[in-house]
Length: 296
Image 1 (cartoon, rainbow, N blue to C red):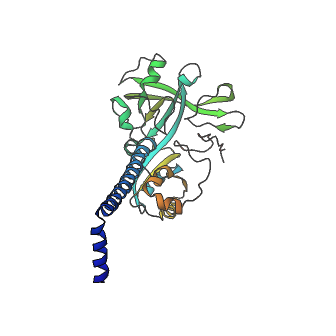
Image 2 (cartoon, rainbow, N blue to C red; image 1 turned 135 degrees about the vertical axis):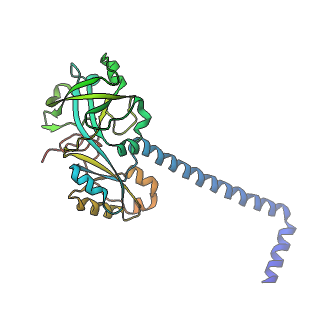
Image 3 (cartoon, rainbow, N blue to C red; image 1 turned 60 degrees about the vertical axis):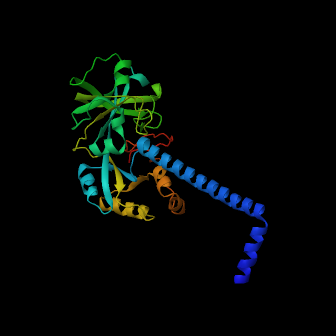
């Protein structure tokens, strides 16, 4: 062993230039590999944080839950937090066009935090109950509405029906003109408590948005679940949690999970059901991917 070490050292010393170039090559290779790994990690981290801001910081969600089911969901194993969203309906101000169509969602405090909605608040605050609302500044200006914080805004809420398929359209889809019908469901008076900027970058956004507090008597909540701990068993655990509240997982947040657990995501990828990507939830709508879902 000593003989090999002696011969190796003698050879290195007798070829100093070659030895120096070899060492420099090794150092440069290590530096390049380190830079690539650090750059790749930084990119993944950037994309992860971007998805949290514009797509929401949750792991999976369920649809069509009652208030009682959402409260039961909070107490389940490996559930850290539940954020609630409910599509209350669309409303038109005057002639029916994209610029006069308002999409109204009901949200809770957790949803505001998990979907980074505070960045869009221009004035006032977010609603604390179903009788308060924040509304898009662009919508007010586009329709010459002289509405200020503290004013009462009366809206006719309703559903948009795609006539050809007798299917309810998502609140996030553009107005389809003569292809759709508007079916009023109720009149609702809100107190305006805040003004929003455009929420166009968010995946929960329509052209013009308004958000109210949650109506606890409703039975069609979408519940966005943040798990306490993530592992490669998250899919099975999520289904168990859903079964415990007599529901099912509508969609896993794959766009975020792929950045958090890139390796196990691909190893454990499960084919998700189609036509379940709309954030507002509910049966019988046409989400962004163009799939059509009908009421049971």
